[in-house]
Length: 78
Image (cartoon, rainbow, N blue to C red; front, side):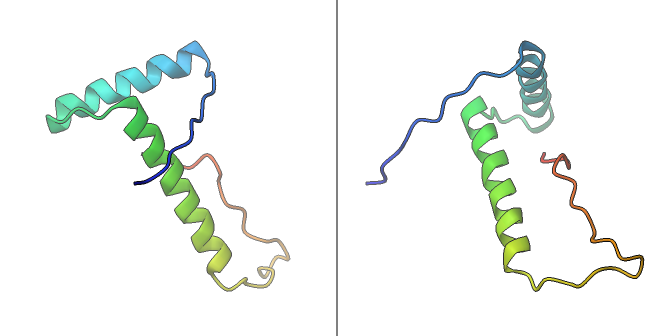
C-alpha cells in the first residue's frame, strides 16, 4: 500500500480557468478525460525528472562568452 500526503494550494482564478479550458480541449482532442489531479501530478513529476536529470548530468564549464546557459523554468510543461 502506497502512503499519500496532501498538497493543497490556492491559485489565481485566471490560472484555474486556463487549466479547466486546457483539460476540456485535451478531452475533445483525445477523447480521454484527464483530471485536474492527474494533470498537476504529471506537471510536477515531469519538472522533477527534468531537474534530477540536469543534476545528474556532468556540469559543463562556462560557455565561450563566459556565461553559463540558463534553463527556462517557465518552459512548456504540457
